Length: 129
Image (cartoon, rainbow, N blue to C red; front, side, top):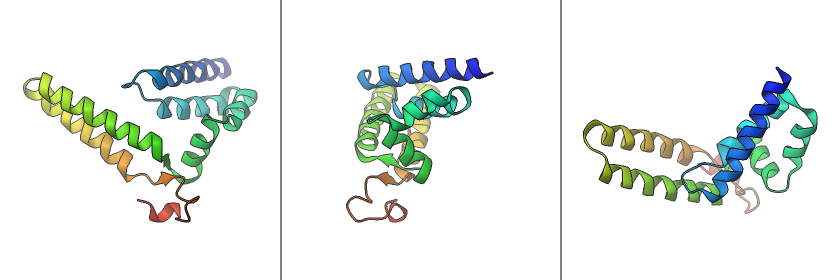
């Protein structure tokens, strides 16, 4: 099982890295999944991803507070709104409704999470909903 988790972690991290450059491929969920897989597959990779200067703060904010960084949140909302709008224009019938409902659900989840980094500005994460 260790090797399966290690492979899943590597795959998730690779998809997350690709998501940095591909607008509709999310980075954060894949990095979080990679961290979870590494915690079960490799102590070395688990420590590496938590100490990584780019991924570490994102993972720790999510793990400790369920928070999403402000830049990631803004990028996700903009990308989702564009893709929902495009889907609503291009799709017909029930598929349009499915796209709008799924998009609205994802937007609700993203916007309901606290914003990481508010503690730096003197705000608590509990009050940043």
